Amino acid sequence: MKPRKASIERVTRETNISVSIDLDGDGQASIKTGVGFLDHMLTALTVHSGIDLAITCNGDLQIDDHHTCEDCALAIGEATDRALGERKGFARFGSAYAPLDESLARAVIDFSGRPFAVVDLGLRREMLGGLSCENIPHFFASLATASRAALHVDVLRGENDHHRAEAAFKALALALRTAIARTDARSVPSTKGVL
Image (cartoon, rainbow, N blue to C red; front, top):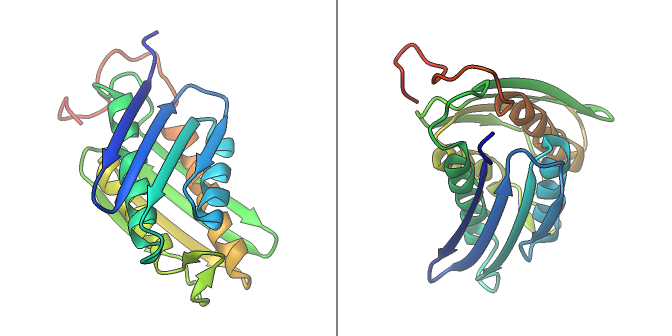
């Protein structure tokens, strides 16, 4: 079986990011973005997806958290896209629900090659730790764009914004676990023959 791993460096005037991903890992996380709440969410994503993820980011946090959040999502998405390679022999689709106490989230993903995101988290706070709540849906959209996936993430209920956000990341993790699962098929899972 061909390893599904990728490492990338993303260097801009706003961020300097290093990402290594192993889609067939066991959920090992080494996350250092400089934004504590983002680290917490990415650790949850890693552990519950079973993907090994190492990421370090030095971003322009003296300005705000936007570039760090966005560029981390783009780097993780690009690494995921590269690790999927020719997109053969994997499930392609994944969906999952995840509760966190009173909150319930749903995530559905399709590694279709056609990026699109619909995200409705219903967050009410301005910030969660050092992460702007407006950047959380933007993270999901940026991840979908760079990984060339259609992604829908909804929080169906919940009162606590920390719980709502974390349930969303955990639902995505479980959907990812299903979508990247290897299959015995040697072909691309598409009537078009390409993804």
